[in-house]
Length: 337
Image (cartoon, rainbow, N blue to C red; front, side, top):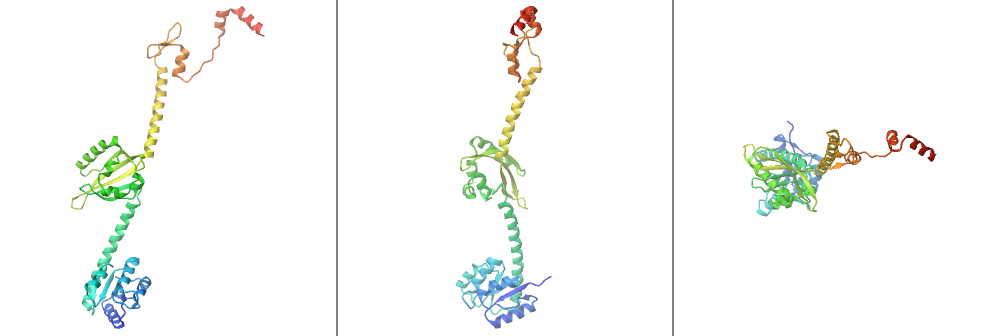
């Protein structure tokens, strides 16, 4: 196991040497130089990359140990343990603002040094793991495309992802301030259905359920939402509230509506074709056709109404003979030419 590296920031040379010897005897690595000025502490920490910084509160120069520790925590996230011969309330209050991991009072005993450093390094390792874990989960939540929420057992919003602004037009604060705000932006015709869904979902404790409904955005635009929610519990089975994911499906619903209209038009066309293929009541003498309402229609009119056809009229030779006779018909042709 690699020994932890400690950087000392101390303006008293003798104290710095004493701390170096004690740390080495305890098995720690010590940064090559003892920093005497607070203004140089951040640069030295960036250079040596220690695991922990021992920082004297009172340092020479314009930057004291408290200010130097604040810079190191903000920029590098390293744990800092303060060294001090002063324990007055004002100094301690200022030091606490930098979130130090511990204090050691001068003169420092080797036993105290070992205990404080071991506890600080352990706590710093746990703190680093928690920050990395929080960063991973927050990154997933903050950058998801859907609107993610977590409501507590009482219905209060514990978390609302930034996507709520894109989907609803409102910031997350509007929902955390007023838990009923979400129900108020639901389209009026869908509110009762959403209330029934919410009531049923609370009763079906461990099931994930979904519902599609409409909301009214801040700009007045109506959006379709696919809302999926599920209750959450801790490792002991204690109810922690509900997690929900809301997705804007407006484009999909518009496409579904257009497709539905096309299907209806096609079905009407198919029904029309089926009518022509079925039994058609036709007069055996005049050839008129009776429609569904009992009216008789000319053959041409009926076909033009129920099929995509048009007619051009002429006489066939047989009808020409019947109407005009063969000689009259021949004479008419000769006269025209």
